Length: 194
Image (cartoon, helix red, strand yellow):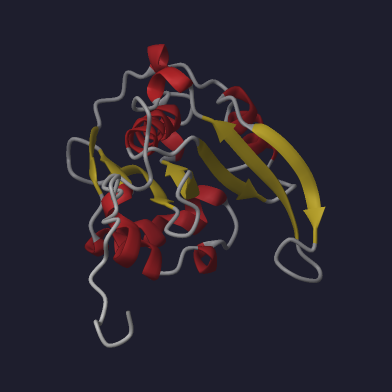
């Protein structure tokens, strides 16, 4: 998130007429065309195309009434950690900062992650991104770090973790929805080896 991102995360201030929709792989070019300008520094390399190719179903785009990009969220449900979700990138048009759009994007993803049985959402940022740190704190994330060497020697990142509200989770989420409750007590065996 841009370093001048205000910590105001109230949906009550959201007045900008934008439309949210699921991302599609084709949104990549419009997103990378603005990220360096929106951040005020080169960050394009931190958002490879593969994120929208492989995780567009859990990512969102916000559009102005004229169809131009107002904001975006690139996130995914971890394929390796079945209780976790991850927000990789979020951006808001500088003209809409403080409008609640980033919070709206985050809350939508929290609901999607909870519905999928996830109970924790993680993210990271640079230690110099004070606006992002303030935003995540205001959104209820626990903050760790900076953690030196997070991406190898010479790197340092701040880690965010937010537990999802139990009321937002589905009742008794089960990572194995179709277990075999009554395995056959008499499996078929080869009579020659029995």
